[in-house]
Image (cartoon, rainbow, N blue to C red):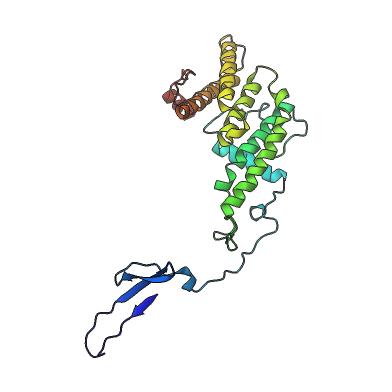
Length: 272
C-alpha cells in the first residue's frame, strides 16, 4: 500500500515522498518513506508466452527417448570426447575397438556388449549438461512443472539405468578371465559408480581393478602382453591411481595404490 501526499500549494517546491505500508496480522504496518520494497509480482502485468515450436522428432522435448543407432553413436562420441581423455581405458585400435564405431557389428561378444552398454550409460549422465537445446527459453515451468534441465536429466538418468541393466546381463561373461577386457569392465563399473554411487561399491571395484592390474603388470614384465596392451595397461594404472585418490580424499584415508612409474613430462612428450 502506497500513500501519496500532495503539496498544499502546487506552486511551492515540494519534495515528494512515498510512504509505504505493509499488510501483516490483519493490519497495516508503517514502514517509512525510505523503505526499500519490491513491487508485488501480482500487480505486474503478466506476459503470456506463446508455446515454443517443438519438433516431433526431437527427443530433447519429450519424456521418452527413441533408441536409434545414430543417437547411440552420439552417446559413444560424447564418451570418447569427455571421459576417454580423462580416463583412457578404452583401446580404440583394431581389432579390440571394433565395436567403437557408428555401424556396430552384429556379432558382438558378451564383453563388447557389456562395454558398449556401460559407455552408453555413463554418457547419459553427461548429455543433459552438454546437449544442444533447440529453444533457449523453453518455459517448461509455466504451470508449476519442473524445469527443462530437470526433466532432461531425469529422462537420461532413467535411460542410463536401462543401459546399465542391459550391461549387467553380461557382467559374468565380461569378468570371467583375468585379462585386459576384465580390467576394462571393472574400471567402467567404477567410473559409472562415480556418477551413480548406489549402483555399486566404488571402493571394492577399485580394489578389484588394482589386484587385476598387478597381475597384468607382472605378465607385462614377462613380455606376455602386446605393446598396445602395455600402453593401455599403463593408462589403466593411471586411471586406478586417480580414482583411488579421489575415493581416499573423500573418505579421508590414505591412498594405497602406487603412483605410476612413468613421468608426466615423458607422457606429454610422447603425446606431442
